Length: 616
Image 1 (spheres, rainbow, N blue to C red):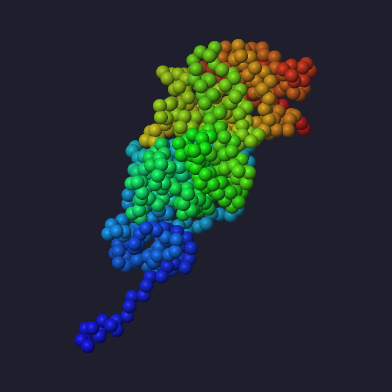
Image 2 (image 1 turned 90 degrees about the horizontal axis):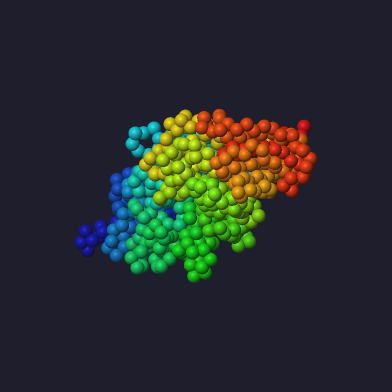
């Protein structure tokens, strides 16, 4: 036998790669090194390359597991290393970013091995009760920036938390922060759903924002996008080389169900692996980042194909089941948290319990409030202003629970895409003038005194009038310019939260519109939780440009009714009339179906709020 052949026959064989014994997906923390696991059922081979092996494709092949996953352990790898997966199929070489990567160099760069160094502190921060929430929607890139160019960051947002606390905000709703293409975006185009946007400060920066918000007594609700992914810089697309009809491959529908308003990138909710991918993503934000709730973007495109609510041929039962699963898991593991649907189709099934067949959300954005309120405030002629629309906005609710709806007069959707901020919609040439101030703050007062969870949009509290763009920051100079408007919002929020213990009814379920004058555009309603002094609140609103100096109104109790807010006061603007409104002693005379009567004054486009001191 030749010497060469004998040597070849006695050389030790390379042992086969062993799959990981531990569970988990993506880059997995281990006692020694890092484990890697990826779902790629159509790949013929998979390797992980990175700074730990000089990007050598031969160094760390992954072993194939049952169920289409591949895995291996890399003892040399550590937190902070860059990496990618190399997949091969049918002689095609695919260079991919890990679908579950937590951190990237940029949206088309490398993945970075990352996990939080510390777990979320126990006990976890608890949101205030839903009936006490004041939500402030913000976009990290435009909320606050100290840069001449470039988006705002988590750090620049942290700098404004003391301001939000002083305003009275106790929850922020953060527009999506998953890594997107480029540095500027609204965030509704997630390229890497598990990674935190690098331009904002990555996962470390977001952790700091959440911790700092909690330190200020402010909860964090995160906006997530599960109705589509991408479409730009989308490494998930045809991830392992397989597809049908030229569509997205294993993570996406590959038939007519793929189509969304944002491209053919709807996840395949019928695949258990894809549902696990999305459900695990939701749990990651809650568990590893400590957020206090999620707002699910456009859920109607998760539960239907074309957004046609009520069309059986259009429904996605698998998407509905996914929503139920996410809400069940969050409710079980994170009690007291809040999930919010942006569905905008007036369906109470979104907020019915999952065990009763509903989707199980805690609340939902209410199109039945924002649209009638904005249309009523924007119309220029008082005679065309509809109090019936306001009545609809006041009474609209889901499941008989006032707080299963989020109410607002401005959101990112309402002030972009051809629509503007409310002051500009009211008076385009004088967005800082009398009419814009008066009617936009009337909308704010309605939001903060109506039954529901009130939400403001960044800058609304000081008359920001720019339509929303991701590259244009909020004009913080307006906070000083319109300091009186800011003070009006602060005072309204304090009443809504019952901080002086005299307006508990604004946190209650109950509403009674007892006075309405369609001709003079006057409306008065009562809010209460249990009723009585310190609880009953009377709100009087004038939707016309004419002061009313003697308005007889019914009240439910005798005694003194104190003026808690008069939005016509000069302290809110030198342009306001400053109509005097005084405390009133109720007369025992049935009026408006109530047992007593008071007489009040209310300025043009103004609100007056009254209540009684608590019984000693």
